[in-house]
Amino acid sequence: MRIEAAFEGVRRIFLDTAPVVYLVEANPEFGALVQRTFQMMEEQGITTVASPVTLAECLVLPLRSQQVLAEQSFRVLLTETEGMSFVDIDAQIGAKAAALRGKYRLRLPDAFQIAVAVCSGCDGFLTNDRALKRVEELNVILLSDLVTSEGE
Image (cartoon, rainbow, N blue to C red; front, side, top):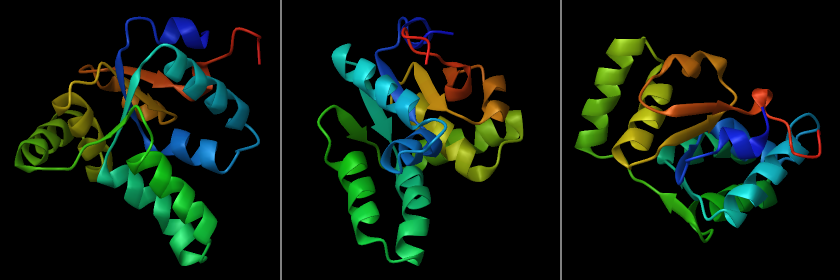
């Protein structure tokens, strides 16, 4: 599916961890696709949303291996980028995560990610986790299903 078609009608999208990691680390398989996706979201004025779970998951490896530049890149992208909304987890999100975890048998981090997206008004969820496609509350967009208009 073309990126533009997948994002049709999406005005606010949650970023799961994988797309963020692929972008910052210039992943050989998905790096160019993610870069084009982020460019398209910026051009179309789509607000991107992330959570403390995204930040925590992204920082594990850089902190463990003392990669200061990678750590800074993740922090800046997720908490200081214009057009990016960083949503903290509160009691409402915690309760929604519990409901989603029960309904879909999600892992707790995934339940929190979906809950943040739903509670913050996202209409899309960008991930590469095929298991999350069963979530009905959002338009779950898989990177592995996307191609650019140039056919990349």
